[in-house]
Image (cartoon, rainbow, N blue to C red; front, side, top):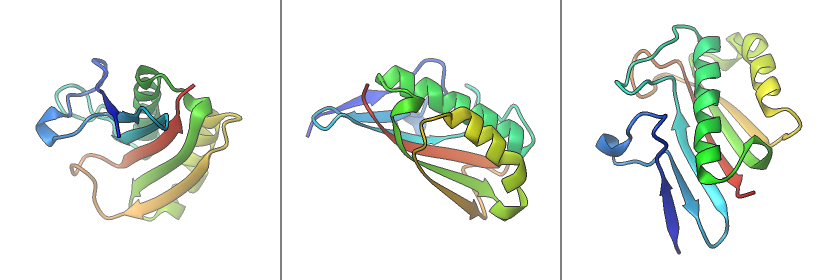
Length: 132
């Protein structure tokens, strides 16, 4: 197995956590994107709502995909973690998510969780994609 580590300068540094923002398995062409959240370079959130944090996490997902040589159109699977009961946010987040994905239509799982990386984080999005 050969892998390429992806750490876009536009995203926070994952090194202190022992992670890369994405990993490309070069033989298969699969791209594994770490959970993307609304963190700036100082590990602080910039949005305080689920909708705002989802938009930022999806922007970060796009950055990681593009740096890896992939795109939203190449997404195969996406998992969305939302703090609390997922159903309480579905009507607000579904249009944002649908707009982001467009015609890509990957497999998607939504999961309500009790906690994420920090108390301020309300949304995390991870994904698997293929190279272009």
